[in-house]
Image 1 (cartoon, rainbow, N blue to C red):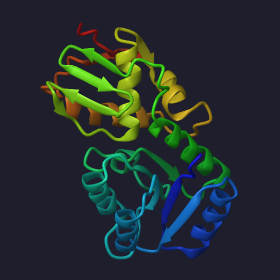
Image 2 (cartoon, helix red, strand yellow; image 1 turned 180 degrees about the horizontal axis):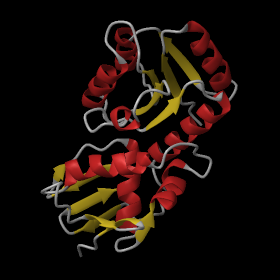
Image 3 (spheres, helix red, strand yellow; image 1 turned 90 degrees about the vertical axis):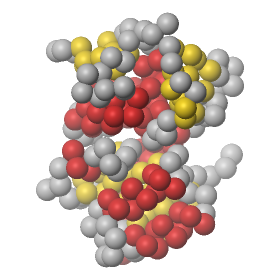
Image 4 (tube, rainbow, N blue to C red; image 1 turned 90 degrees about the horizontal axis):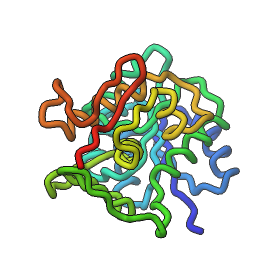
Amino acid sequence: MLKSNILIVEDEEHIRKFVRINLEGEGFIVWEADSGEKGLEIARKEDIDVVLLDIMLPGIDGFEVCKILREEIPNIGIIMLTAKSQDIDKIMGLEYGTDDYMVKPFNPKELVLRVKSLLRRMEGNNPKEMDEIIDGPFKINKYSRKFLKNEKDIELTPTEFSIMKLFIENAGKAFSRDEILNLIWGEDFIGDSKIVDVNIRRLRSKIEDDPSEPKYIETVWGVGYRWRNNI
């Protein structure tokens, strides 16, 4: 089984070493960069699966690095490392496309769990499953991890793809925010359920004809969200 490559982009050396020790202890191959520019250089050259990306970096900051990575390597996993004072709405903003976030100081064991959870979301599905599902103008291929609307490819982050897969496989079912958290991020996730709302807003901006009047990802007031059955 191939080992996953994890890139730590963090300017504080003691944090990089602390995280590296814990990741290597779980069998991951770890790369390090102390600036956004070096991080991008490594990501472009190596087959990186997940980037652990600090926001406050010398030179270009983590937001700009995230934006560039999403444009150049859309399927890469990104976990932001952030200070308590920073707003999750900004961290997970529509223009950046972060998959997850961790607030400093964090428990390294929890970070490892987050990395594993993200990698599970990025993995190909069981070959015995039906590879393709068509729902109205949408087509989702679980093997190639492609999502199309009217045959046009829509770039989704690994987390966004997992949410769409959950919705389309369960069209018409209302999911609470906690259910989505448990099914997508894992039951061991410790964080704000607002992460679900931010991902839904981002998805609506990508797939809805009019994101301000969504007709595919419906809000179920007092519950959460539901994918409208379009068949």
